[in-house]
Image 1 (cartoon, rainbow, N blue to C red):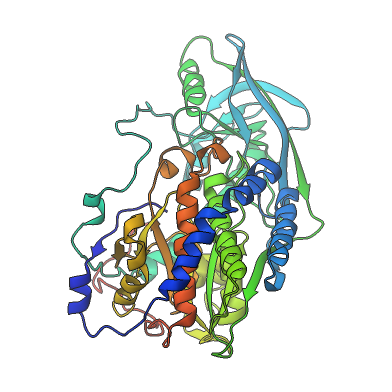
Image 2 (image 1 turned 30 degrees about the vertical axis):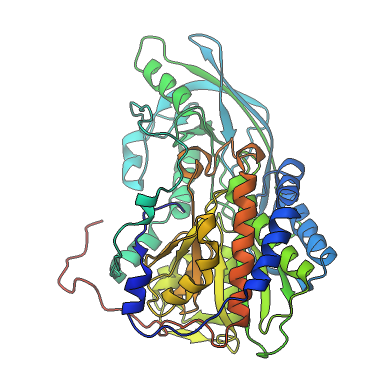
Length: 538
């Protein structure tokens, strides 16, 4: 995700200690640049994933198609060990069609999308609205007896706002030249446990049960963005957790209009229709794996990954067909060049990232390390990803040391500008060496910051060197991330070609280095940053 970061200068890195020699094969870099810029297939790959397949909700028919097609492409390029690795996920879901309109006090079509993993309306439903903002179970009592036969608007209306900065942004030299800053970790184990127990999926189930008991016709929420953008994100994907109340998201402007009219002498009536399908043929989701085998360093491998799944409001182009296409293009470039790396280079396309970084967690759990189960029955009953980082000790698996470096791409369509070293002071100067050939392409920054929210985080949480690249934000966060306009049109071909070239080179350097990237110590249970803090009240 696009967040602020702190740059690290070469001088500061050299001052930190001796610099291990990690030479870059510049002749190979020339070949990578030629293959990646003059013979690129990255946009053809991206177009197939977006225009042809479309939005790839985990376990949806579109995701199943993407799982098969990406394996076929890896095999056609000659990669080895191409396979799908399954893990338990839940129900598939897809939207067939939907509509929403106001019928009183005037007729008007509204911009709407079904909320993922909610049921359809079983035809057209119609009823008056009630604006009942509900964000916690403690608010249920205030609305008892007031919702029967109503379409319930559950978001607190606000006044909106116009943008004050351009939506599209590239990182400037000033952005990339911030002083070096090491951000200390903040450890609050009690807060982490409390957050897990109050997760959005748990509240969604309680809210649905309340709406059913009160006889509500449907639930409507407001889009989190302006400009008519829609998302449709939802998290009730587990078997047995499907709500009974149809859920609809309305464009923010349409929602606010309804809320204003609800305060007048002519409150609105709505007409909603949502047709969806659930897909229960296979409740397992699948990560896609492919290798370029190593010639020595038996068992060791480096890895690059991006999540293949997306939301369904549009085609999931910048999030994350872009990253997936770059991963696949780096694989094609290196295989076409006929490289014979010392270590195996593994490519992964993850599933279930949008529902909680589930695919890469499943890989960590199966191949690298697991964690002791929770002794608290309430926490033990929660999904694995909600308590993973709060459980101790870490228990390495036999393959723990085999993965020497993991590189992730999940920041949209912008060119690579550097890499986040995740606080690994020893690895930072090595990254400077590996990225130096691409300074003329805008790659100049090694940051000490920790980048969260995507598929390297569970690697990092067990001490595996896992890294996320820094990319130009473009309009990723401002208007594309998870929205109804995330289509091929917003991909930047030159940027994606550059990213594939940089990634291919970094992977080859990591695979051929005499020594693996330095690891951080195996994490152990941290002490609270503030040992004298009082717990926050419920």
